[in-house]
Length: 477
Image (cartoon, rainbow, N blue to C red; front, side):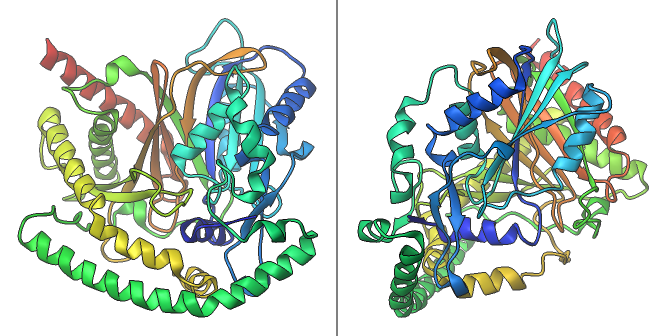
């Protein structure tokens, strides 16, 4: 039994208040193989992947964080969807409904959705497409780990390295990283093991309180030192704050029918822009598109910002969610796309330097040892429906490269991948940027109340990407 890290438990508890699952889309050619064979393949392959052989078990009274225990594949985890019209717009409509759902990690933390015989998909091949969406509890994985899970599921060769981990996953083996309660308890019946776990949690509770106080004081000192180093110019300043815009006002967060999605599939070669990363290229395009969108809605703004999740180097506290969100100015007052991209890249680099500074891990260590009842109380009381006067960004741009395009499903090759960062009380418009082989997909996920004309925004974004690409070509020429 492997106990959740505090960050992962926070994601799990938040899932009961808002939708925060991960949705990883992969578009394949449709091989025509019977769906029963595909379901059998998923059952067989998932049995060899440690992260897909678990579910969560909670303790009464939240005496400790939930634990991963064994959870074998169930037939209902493979869901085939039949659309009124098996085409790409129909898939996008169905995806909007899916993004309003959530898995219960205490039952099963993942589900696979399949759409077959799809006409008109981007990067079309000689026949119809099969669109597959892997839905993961955020407690199970962040974006980078989710991509690794999907790669293990769809790799042409069996994930041999995961066999041993899967067989020992409930004992904290590789692939199920975290804290253990001891092998002796694992030999007990589930009910007895839970009683032992509860007793151990009660015994550890006083020590956790002491460690929280001690590390809290150290975090206070680290925060003061961080402020001094920032004032002295030795550490970059934190990201700026921004007043909310039209796309940040309270919307229909709890309406499962409010989600809308669109995707723009690009050639990776076109994303090279004066030596900048794909993330910078898309941030530059988003800055152009969102500025024009708000101006067209008679809601112009003087400044725009974006939140960019950044994976942290190493797994410092054995958490499955190992990232920070960086607040970036999008410099919409700069008319030249190349100069704007340079400024965005410099701001992103500065935020990364600050985010990786050891002093910032002090607060993470406090969270990691906080007693579960206290953290659960804080999660339950957090005002997720409130929009503050100052926000870290107006939108989210989350970027993950998912590796080479050597994945298959049902014997058919993959075409492209996509993903949809969750919308919440502040972020009603998010962007996923996902590379696979020679493609990069820019996905748009919006709350229909905040962005009622998602097609208009998507066309503005498509045009902005072309504008940035043309600027890059002229510069290189």
